[in-house]
Image (cartoon, helix red, strand yellow):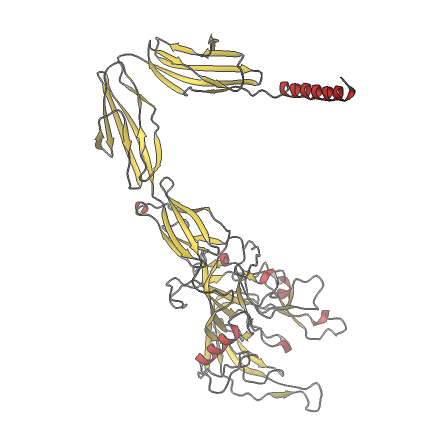
Length: 601
């Protein structure tokens, strides 16, 4: 043998020995026991042959223990007792991989006793139309007869019984077995789940789901989504007999409805909508600003325009991605808009945004919270319950912003108290504006003085239902009439929530300007309003889950189709003029692909 062949032989021998070594070192699995039941019932004196099946390796040891005493060391074992009672039998099997045991409960029944029924559960759950084969085991020392009763009606007299029904519900089945010593009864409850229900719905469309007929008289009904192809969906009224479902993504959504026992599966196929949808405002339904410095300019009033004309102009300005800004004027002025689809109330996310023109101030007291030009508009929302495309008979819900009930938790609240602002929240506020008697401004100061300016300080009179009154000031920057020119009546009344005054003259903090300077900072509320934070700020996003009903309860809306915004503050801010909410583009954040987490209220 030459050196080359010798080397090959040595390498082969090394590999073979290594393989043998690896094989011998492999872990041996512990044995597994099968072929034995957990419970047996026999007559006293009868033999019970137990023949287990052992897998995983070669067992080295068998031990049968009866009530703790070892009775056999073989694979198979025959149990036989002449004394009635309960016995505990344990099989222990051991090999190189470990040890395992199986516990068995054996009941020995006296002879000359009524029958003993086993191999039947107390409760079964099946789907409608599915067969349930019931085959009990009977222990008796004499001949027996059988009687099956379904809801008290005899249905069979055989040992075995096949249950099947298409009707969902809860059924009581009784088996009576009789011998010469008496009758034994076994009661079984069978829960029959409903057949699968299949429905279809387009994306961004609310689907009403009615509970099956068998749940008509049930109080505790619960709906649940089992699996979904996307998180962009909402199931509302999930604890009622009529739930509402809406989804943004196509696919199959599997739900079930149950009373805690009986279930029905609902397979919802969400398909593509037939029309092209837009993320943005699709229609303006109404527009009525309160008197303000931008009224009749944003949008532009033309002589002879009617209310319908101004609604049309607001529509031209607000619809679509390239929207222009309109004003709502002073407190109470409003606009009502709609979308061409339902904006989905996705749990844990902000759902839509209505742009304004809020911005942050360059100046303010050190350490102050965000503020600048923040002119919050209160938001009302509705969904198209009657599906007629109009916000007519649909219920409106209030988006509960951070100060809709109290402003105590606003970070600037102490500043406002110190400044003697009106920090109350009025939820039943009414305010009436009166048409101005004159439009020509007055010169304030000496005519030749360069600091003189033109204004009307007592311009548009107003009064509210809280025994307050005052005037809207006409400033030097805007000289058109501030009263909506298309309104022929001499007064206008608005109703709603009035928020606390958030504007504070912080002029003394402006570098290089004396303490008497006027520099109003309008501080932002924490969340829940339009024109309150800059448009790109997450806090301009609105969560539909903030909606409450007229009693202050969470609304649990599936989504919304309509939005109404009205100015929430009545305050004059020096040369800035009145607090006036401005509205621009509105968008569905989910359809636009923007994910903004919500905050706890």
